[in-house]
Length: 214
Image (cartoon, rainbow, N blue to C red; front, side):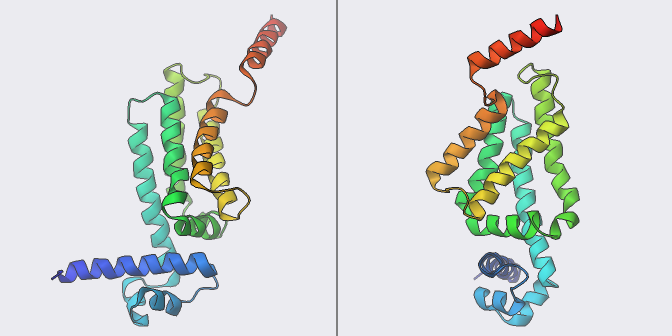
């Protein structure tokens, strides 16, 4: 028989899962706490017992998810892998979340990234930018990335690319099969690390720029 604490943890988990499902289906603002309770199979008052408000439910969903994702990104950051593989791993963490839990990603994109809740969570989000900035800076120190790039700006570009792909999937503007997710991961790495231009054309352009400066 589970202990009282285990039972409480399980009830909190069920309520959070129910909130994700209801928010994803109806939207945060249109959802009611009673709907979350019904989805979780618990009494209405129990939701307020574990979470003081609907706002706290959304904040808990965000903070738990973000904490887990940031921990995974920082683990990649602290690895000795080449920067290209680190960027690939980070893309896999972020974009792969869609395959694992599309309902959760819908809530995060629609209700946090595209909602007023974003400003309240900006301090947490800054930790992700800082981790990406350190990955870029270390890649520059190793001679794996162009030294003239601004690491902070590059970090925002990486983050923006990943978030916009997730947004495309959430709103149905991009195909989102397992193959599409894998292709998106590879495309992010290719564009960020190699650029869009053909290698020969890039080499010619660089040569022309050098001659112009001479």
